[in-house]
Length: 303
Ligand code: MG
Figure 1 (cartoon, protein in one colour):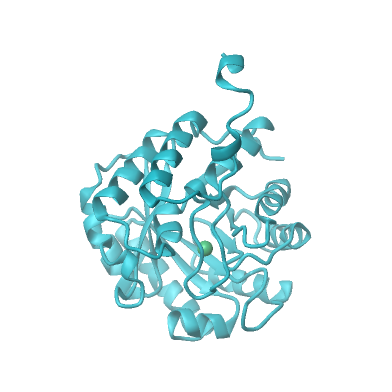
Figure 2: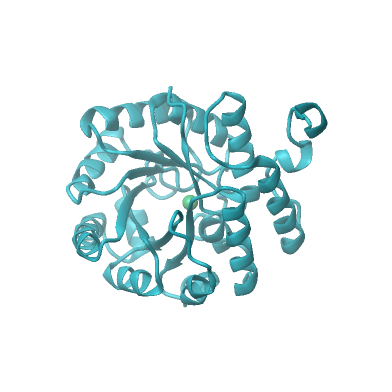
């Protein structure tokens, strides 16, 4: 098992995108700066998509402009097409993430085109990113099931992964977009990807819709992923999947990995303070269990 897992904080994008209200730009900036202070070094900041479809991300450029940029941090912009890529680079993102959905139906509903067209768009973005010196990675979405098509075969998921790998991504992520996956599926997909795509960095993205998120994260680490997505407080969902709940909570994941001696670089007490701040700002109880139960061992014993 890997003793280091890279944590990608997706709360500012995947999390806040599903909030009913629009989170103020200055609070987004404050949230991101605090997360960086707590040790997070890769963060999905925003998405560069149609602001009419996703009004919560309409301030993408303003958020990037408001951040004090650090050389050791990757500021990720989610893009779904070439236009979004150009916007992300112009705004100052030093990493872009593109999503290709293994379910053609979901890809059409989410991105307005079929999976094949999104794969072609990704390969085009990958070329442009190399020329621009911007890191680019790609997610295979609905890898564990689709609300419209049901089960997606492992063969289909790995076929899409092999096709996007032609763009030589920094990393390929497998996303449980709506939160239906179980750990055995995770092992099968991650182990399959390691065999079919030797040397390619792998990441996984889980939602806790059916309470299997942390179990899936454990299976992914056991199977050898390099990185995991998560959101502070466990905020989030998916606007195209009504019942989807948040990503796996960053603090719960860092706690689980930390107790096993897996290095993440995140300062857990500092992260919990950010989470408490966010809970106050959002005015509701957040899903993360560590916010309720506290760290262990407690600070006075740990010292
Ligand atoms: Mg998601």
